Length: 312
Image (spheres, rainbow, N blue to C red):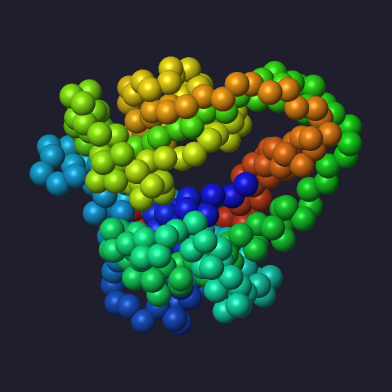
C-alpha cells in the first residue's frame, strides 16, 4: 500500500525537481542549467528548488560544502531525468486536471492530524501552493510512465506461480516488525544524533528534531513492515536488529539511517491465493525497472539536451 506521508515528503524533496517549465513560461532570469528541447531550467530556478533541501544540511561543518555540492549534483540529475519525461508528456499531449491535483492533495491529507499537514511545509520552507505545483508536475511524470511502460506490462498465471516458488521463504516467513526511523542528510549530523541516542537521548524527540524522513512528524514511527516493504539496502540490517536496540548508521543513496525495532510479530504462513495481488505488484515493479532505463535512454537520444554542471 502506498504511504501518503512518504508521497508528501517525496514531493517536498526528490520531486521538487518536477517544477521545470517551458522556455516560453519561465519568466525567470539567469543562465540555463538544463535544456531539453524547448524546456529550460535556469540557475535561479535551480537554486529556488534546491533551497528546501539545502536547509536539511548542516552548517558550519568542515565538509558541509562538499556534502551540499554532491547533493546539488544528484539533484541536477533528478531534474534532468524528470524534464526528459515531461518533454515526452508534451509529445503525448498529456496533462493533469485541477480535479486530479485536489484529489491527490486530499489523499495525502488523510494521514495527517489537523494542523500537522501545514507544519510539514513550514519545516521545509515550502508554501502549499508551490508544493501543489510540484505535485502537478510529478503526477504528469507518473502519467507518462503509466502510459508508456505500465500499460505495456502483462502478467500471466505461470509467472505468479514461479515468483511465489522462487520467493517462497519470503512469503512463508511473513514476519512483521514495527520500525522507528531517523534519516539524516550527512554523516556528521548522523554521527551526532547517534551519539545522543547512545547517551540515552529520546528516539522520538531526535526524530522530530533532525530526521528528514516522512515519518519524522510521527516521531520516526514507520508502523509495521514486512520483508519486501523496505529498500533492499535497508531490509537485511533492519530485520537483523533485536527489539529495542538502536542500529549503527546505515548508509544508502538517500542518506544515513538510524533504525530502532520497537516490536516484532510472529511469522505467519500465507498461501498463494492470499498473495496474488502482492505478487503481481512485485512482478510489475521488476518489469517496470527493467524497461525504464532503456526507455529513458531512447528518449534522451531523441531530444536536444544541454546540461551545465559547472554552473551549480
